[in-house]
Image: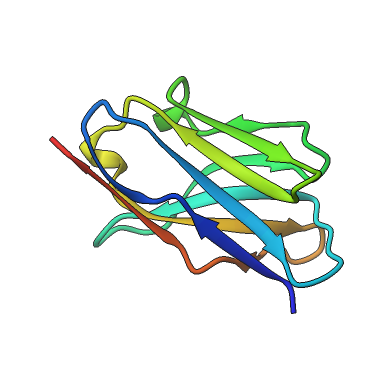
Length: 118
């Protein structure tokens, strides 16, 4: 069974950096894209970034633009989210997800906690 396994979360001070990684494991799999979502306490889940399965077409949402970068390592079958200049409002559980053409963001990992203190 295919799974998305996130790693790299943690606690940092405002202005710090973290890199999240998501590995696609468990068997042959392909998707239209891989992406990252986040959910802060008491808030709805929000989309953060996406990148095409082959590595092109990267996109990040405005609140993190210029601070977050999404990248894809096809050989390792991973997707990374490099986060810099972190702010307390970036505190959330970050989820990796796979986008299927017909079913949308239908596969999601368990999430990894990111906490940014002021």
